[in-house]
Structure formats: C-alpha cells, structure tokens
Amino acid sequence: MDLGVAESTWIAFALTVLLAVLHLAAPRIRSLPLVPERAMGSFAGGLAVAYVFLHLLPELASGNEAVGEALSDVVEPTPLLELAIFLVALAGFTAFYGLERLAERHSDDGRDTAGVYWLHLGSFMLYNALITYTMILRVRTGLLFAILFAIAMGLHFLLTDRGLAEHYPRRFRSSGRVLLAASLLVGWVLAAVAAPVSTVAVALLTALLGGSVLLNVFKEEIPSTRRSSFGWFVTALVLYAALLATITAIEA
Image (spheres, rainbow, N blue to C red):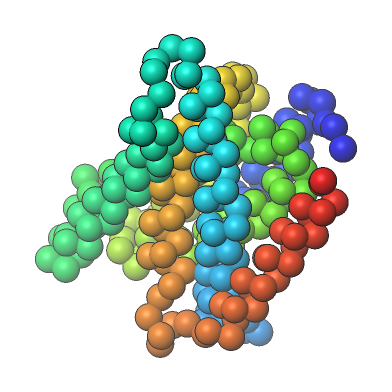
C-alpha cells in the first residue's frame, strides 16, 4: 500500500502519540496487578532483542550499501568507507555507554547531581526525537513494519523508564517522563516541517539511533535472573519473529 506524504505524516503522528502515552503511563503499566513486572520486563526484552537482530541489523546493512553507493562518485571506495555506517552505530553505542557509566558512578557515590541528570536525560530526549523523526519515512517505507517498530520501541520505553527512575528517583518523577514524551512530539514536528530527504542522512541517523538502541536493549532488556523470566523472553522472541516473517511475506 503506497501512502502519500500527508497520510504518512498523520499515521506517524498517531504512532508518536501512542509512544508518548506509553512513556507517561510506564510506571502504572509496570505495576498492573495482573502483569508481574518480571514477566513484562522479559517480554519487552524479548521483543526488543528480536527487533535488533531481525530488523535493526539488516536495516543498518542496507543503509551501509546506500551510503556506499551515494559516496562512490565522490570518494574512492575503501574497506574503511564500507564500515562507515557501523562506525556511526558504534559511536552512538559508545556515547550512551559513557553516559550510563557516568550516571552509575554518581549513583554509587550517592551524588544525584543536576548536571549528570540533565546530561543523561538530554541524551534520551535526543534518542526519542530520532525515533519519531524517522517515523514518517518508516511509515512510507512500510506501514506494518512501522507499526511493529513502534510496538517494540513502546515496550522498550517501559524498561528505559525503570532504569532512569532507579538512577534519579526524585528528579525523574518530577520532570523526566513529561520531557521524554515531549521530545517524541518534537521529533515528529521536525520531520513534518523538514523531513529527511537524503538517503545518506537517513542511513546515518538510523545508524546513530541503532547504536543507542543496541546499548539500551542489552542493558535494560537482559536484566539479572532475579528480575527476568526466560519463558516470557523466548515467547516474545518467537512472536516478533513470526510477526516479522508474516509482514515480510505480505509486503513482498
């Protein structure tokens, strides 16, 4: 199904609002009596990990090919250039890992400083804005894939919310969730006003986002055994793989 720019924009807006609502409602969802947090966390983790291996990594490889083709007329192809998109993903991974280590060090010292909090939160706000900035393009590329991406990210937010709330229990409760939800809307507005048109730019943004997703997935979605359930984890993996295979067959 080919969607126009206007249709794609408003569908992306609906998905953005859904993600924002999930951010704001995250603590209530995690505390639902019929859904133990242990099961919820493991299910969300399984979906996110399946997304990384079955969707994100192939997307990065495809983006790397696009970047190579776009730059082949400008510079001489080299083995290093062929790794360009993965270097950007690695940079995103490293940047978020550094911020996480900084936050943990201050938490261990008992210093919940404003500077570290705003730096950490700001990085997640950028992360959220990138998710929705690329959402319109995702919808135009494939509506069902975009919906599946939004589901994976929405459940992923439940666990990033838990991590931030544990690091900054007072500050995050008062301002964090609202700002994270707002950053999702900002990303959509930027895309609606100035959507990315360059294949290279889209591939690089996806790679930067991909590196961040990789870190957050393996940090939050594979927790200690006391907070996880392997059964729910595998259930989500199988479900996401089945959905992705079905959607691929439909879109083919």
